[in-house]
Image (cartoon, rainbow, N blue to C red; front, side, top):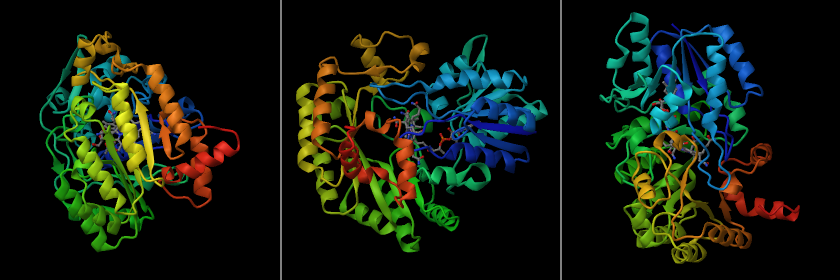
Length: 475
Ligand code: B12
């Protein structure tokens, strides 16, 4: 079959994200014996025209759409990316009636709503590299698509999905040959990192989160040795800025430690990152192993330093763990990005102050604090129920593709926004969602790369903000 996979993500903040999942799917489809082309819309000046031209060249029997982001998760300046689907589907339908299949993280989060919005035949939940080839096989041989685990569709306007088990990792760590599918240099020159996953699944039960919906609750771990091989392979292809995109990198702890120790032993000369660390599983041994492996930056998703809020979010750790993590970070040189989310259930102006006091006292001046205000609410999460109970949310799930946010009713949004504005003005190493959605950030990434800066750019927050302030831009 002729298969066209379209990567629909065009968002370049904070950096353009290399479409790992779509490349894995394309590679699996090729291995299954089909002719496959991947159209990455990220850097296309005229996406509709590029798509029209690709449809003409490829004449596909099936079109797969990779959909990463529903929106930008930003309450202050929301952008709804899912709306881009309308013109994409219209363009495909204008040329061919072949089946259209949705896949990607966004589809894992809101499959029914995206199927309804796009008005297409199928959606694939989860591991596309396993399910999509099965779907193609069924379509080409007249098999029963609905019997494939991981498939979702609308039947007489009712959402149906086959929830049977699908496997991805069989111990190995999959990495595609990125050069075959995308313009790698275009990403690298914008400070993108090369993504790699060491596991799937999430054991945590944070009330707002979609990770278990996307990847499942059970861990599926890559054998650490195969992760080392995968990193070695990437390095051999000149891809040295590598980011672990596990939903939480350091849980299970032993697995993360084995991965880091393996990479350190292999001396691969790579620059590693992960922005998804849980403070509870951070200790001296792990940070030492990470430094030895070649980590150049870590992000810790603490969300808050208030016990009331951490409990409300069901983070599974306490403020004491947050303080401990800070003490451990202080004993190391690794740059750290502290990620906070203000406005969860139970948040008040006092709990915001608790978090700000932590940041002021424990975050080193060379490190960076990122503050987000408001939490995106997704259907099926505990936060959705809370929001409905509290009367903060009245929209039907079907309408929740449009970005909707939770903010604690005990918090005055204007006031907390002003507080954070003042705090950011004072601390040049603090940033907010406004900073990462700055329209000129993509340009800054490119200039940085030209001047020899390598990811992560956030390490240079203080100098960048100072420089911008010098030329009259207070961001
Ligand atoms: C790591 C991560 C990041 C890192 C990425 C680093 C990097 N170098 O790649 C950082 C921190 C930069 C980031 C940023 C953002 N992220 Co993010 N991120 C993730 C995370 C945890 C993992 C993504 C990943 O790489 N997975 C591994 C790959 C292999 O999986 P995959 O791409 O999904 O592909 C699989 C399937 O989806 C499917 N598939 C994929 N394509 C296709 C195509 C077809 C045809 C088929 C059939 C199947 C298929 O098969 C693939 C293989 O199994 C996810 C949560 C999650 N658990 O998925 C959130 C997630 C993707 N992010 C999300 C968001 C919102 C964002 C931001 C907008 C946040 C912000 N305001 O900055 C930005 C957007 C960045 C951008 N430019 O697009 C959302 C997106 C959905 C939504 N809610 O809108 C998610 C789902 C988290 C959430 N809140 O629900 N993110």
